[in-house]
Amino acid sequence: MIVVAGHIDVDPANEAKVDPIARTMMEETRRETGCRVYDITRSLETPGRLHLYEEWDDLAALEAHFDTPHMKTWREALAALGVLGRQVARMEAGEPTAL
Image 1 (cartoon, rainbow, N blue to C red):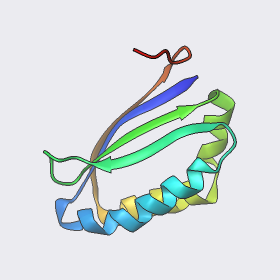
Image 2 (cartoon, one colour; image 1 turned 60 degrees about the horizontal axis):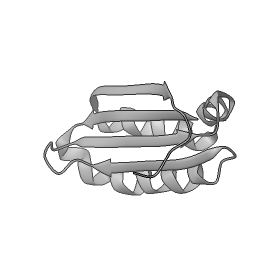
Image 3 (spheres, rainbow, N blue to C red; image 1 turned 90 degrees about the vertical axis):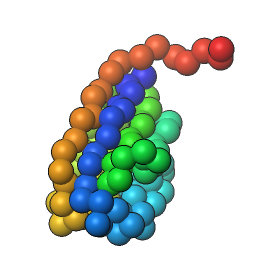
């Protein structure tokens, strides 16, 4: 399983404009083959910060995701809203176990 986690910082003045774009991105991505979890949430502590958390069956599924039309739209929208920084990492993980 592949896990992607991190955050993207956008101009706080444009934060509310991200919501409909993020909602569409989540809906479209969750329908992709190999997508287990795809969440974009806003930080409660840092204005303009979006937290990302994703789980994919394998690297091939994640790489296919990068070529989707909704990913292109997402990237273009974020650029227009003013990305101030990002920190996102991809990790390989075993199957989850209950705690």
